[in-house]
Length: 387
Image (cartoon, rainbow, N blue to C red; front, top):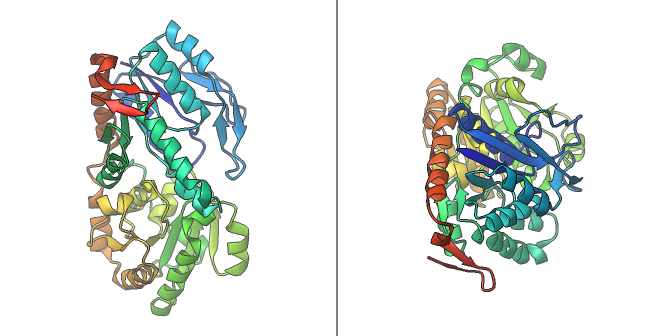
């Protein structure tokens, strides 16, 4: 098959959407399918379109997310591109102007299109003081995804929620993790020495964007509780973001490792002992899978990836939004971490390989490519699906 993947973020940018799409591209390519990536030209480097299967579009910088660019509308260009070399199906990972243009071009040309629901932008609006517009943002997301032939989600919890919210055909496509990259074997004593830790001391990790929507205050509170039972613990922050400077100024004992990529990121994960993930705004939370694959027991709230994959033998789940329970779980887990728990963490995600994820996506796209477009018609005037 020839598949077009449309996304407004892609490596070397580091976030869940970019890494998920890149994993799908690799998996589909490895299976022998031709994948065309349509994305904005990135500002981080001299982004030259050397790859015939990469189509670079115009974009603008995202004000609240340095390093990312939002794709500008490009319906006319995509329509001409896909007329000359028609894909069998289109996967659209983001809901911005570029994603909207791709969906419009695919519909006009009768090309099957599916979307991925990766980010709860309505939750982001609330965390940046824009709660009044959150309902309108969610309504836009619903209209956008209803225009596709299917919306792909990573958890049964989110599938059921979007079903109830009237998103149309919602299909579960479980996420994968690169267990060869994220591996306990990458544990690095020299790196732990840089952090100021001996082998028997506790390295507590936070991995991700250091920003208000990540519930950072709870991470700090939980670590201070861990310090009451493990005075030897150190808190290692991997990532960057707008809240880093203030967090670092208020907590001079924390270690800030900055942005890490590829094997360096995998070494940082594997060199940790416990992962705190207090975010309440994740659609999924890829970092949970990466931590578990690295053999790092995890504390997270009971939703998203944690609900699907975090077991009692490899971590703790706190009731959603219960800060006190999260702190208690973190303190208890700090006293319980051992080798069997690390092995259980790794085993919890052993079946989530990228090849299976790509094969499941391919099966859905092949099904849609065989079906007539009229099999699922959307009435744009009323925004209602009809079978």
